[in-house]
Figure 1 (cartoon, rainbow, N blue to C red):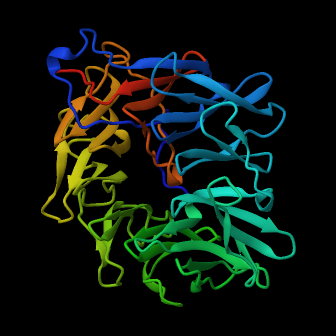
Figure 2 (tube, helix red, strand yellow):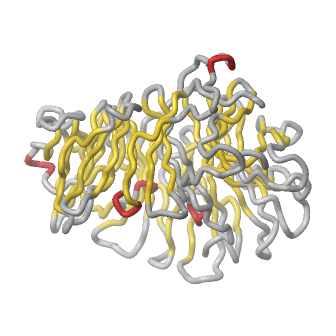
Length: 466
């Protein structure tokens, strides 16, 4: 069941950062240190933005085809790489970076690209016909290959025959989930993933594949009506939720240390809305959860992997309303998030992992009004987000070395830049920026015209106070 959080009309695309700061005297007089590198109609994209080395790759559609594009942060360097599929076919999916190359799936075929037209083509590995990219793993691309009658196989590949090998296949015969959030890598390099056996296809299970190739079953659900969700690694420990598909049933938080059948039930949550925002920080799991007996009081929670160590972290806004923390994002030795204490509105908060070290980081729009920060993302030691200071509208901001500042004023004056926000689980806003080289990329979508614009911004840029 969805949390009652209104979807914000925004979604940024990329993040690229450097350690150096630009002196205030070098900031442009009109304070717009951002470049519109591409403009398309909203239906055309860009979609599937992913950073590969120092460039941003994405998909754009036209009246005739789906094409792969790339950008180096400049207008002249934002170009089409190659046409991938006719517009009548489904668009390319699962854009994934691995080993400095881009991989993706199109019409059931695994493709790769080095950023050139000649280097963009289907992967020429006969064993990987109809394979689906999952994630980067052990420095290569992890792909899922379905074998009729034998279940699924997991392969690692660099795009060549010599650099491809199977790491898991029958027996046992497994059906492995292809959702991106269905697998995680532990600190030791083991792969934990969700799947089922061909012999018992209605029972979800959690498996660990060790670096030596051993397969360990960590958890087996009680039946087909139970889903395994929000898989998150904290060191070598893995946390996850099980949810009954029937509405009104509670969510159960579990933890496994990676040994066979080691999953331990930590706590039951939310008959009305499940917890969300699972984030590894300070060797523990932080997340947002509400009271167990009603739809109220969403606050930060923490778990060390034991029932006794799973509890509400702080009560920022006591009572039924709750502070509803979102966008939990780690920067260095601090965890940032957005919350409403009932006094300052929705603003940016931070914690060092202790209750006494949890505080309002900055009240961007002073007093009760909210600045509504969203889209938090990090890179090269900086935190980027969007906020409204009440004077300049919603614009990009960043935190560097503990100092918050507005980065750009894309729509001068009190107008807001219609920056789009990624949508996370249960419609809470997700990350809005993606780094590629020395640039931050983001997308604006006009509310008056059906146009999208892709922007790039050098990470040292910012707007000095006026």
